[in-house]
View 1 (cartoon, rainbow, N blue to C red):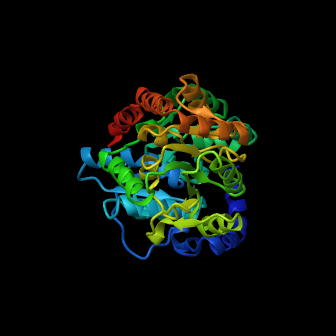
View 2: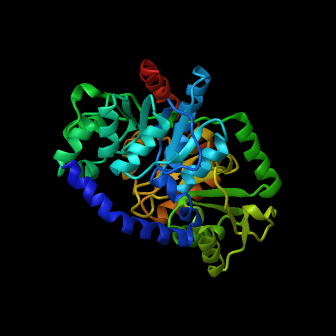
View 3: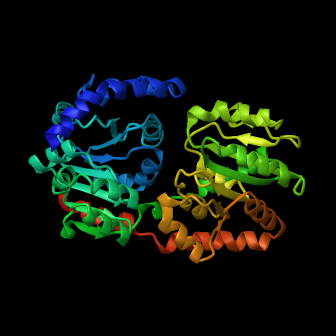
Length: 419
């Protein structure tokens, strides 16, 4: 079955490259470093690395505390962090700089996987969340490289898909030493798709171990004081196509009741910054781009954050935050950063990717879920009118994050046995 999969992957490579070209129209970074996607490298890298893989920005941000802990505990070790997307790559370079090695993960074709492994000779392989690559996993198994899937999650939809190809998935999972699942439901789904029950443990979600320094809180407060002019700040984070227009319409309605309202928009993907700016202007809204360095004046409607890696600081500069990807059927995004910062959190009905977190935070009345535009309006207006309500929601949010922390320590202890 894996041979058939490999042949099919080889045949699909031209289409994959066309897709990269297509994506590069809006995100030019996809045009570059194709050699790494086939494990051809222009320089010699260190070998015997501790290797971590995280697909994109969300997984990379969650991984940083574990990588930093590994560096503190094993200062002589060489760490490699791979990603799939340019945005994930950019975050690694911005945060870790030269302290780790970094390349794109190669495509899961035998020749590329072999070149990658010969180049880096990893002593241990650590894959974030849901990535299952049959050839990569088989190579780890054949060469006795301890392979871990950490912060592992598996939706019902994904599990159903994997169950249709057991001849491919089960041998891949047999090469995994441990699957550290986020929840018991995730653990059960991994077992259902072929993982051996003794290799699956529920160790929690490392996204709860978010780091929020006093420096970030201070930078947020300074931004609000210097650029936002003391206005009531409503931040919309990680928005997707067709989502911003919803909030722009709501903003115009709420503005009639809250004249001092300022909308801060943080698009999920950097290639959409220009598109969102144009959309704001089409709605006759006055926009200030963060990279312009301009201060928001009384007539400014939207502060558009056209930067990467500043979301926690922007949360700290806000009075209320709505986490996007949840008003359109994307599946939601991580609400824990906003809660950890101490910003009252709102989110929409589409939270399939963060179902357990959404259920938990609502159970403790530590966030507000809004089903439609009218509920968003009512929530923002109610929070504006009652500072005690805002403070209560913020404190409950921080408590919710604190009580679920510790996954990084548990996962680190497991990984340390093979280092």
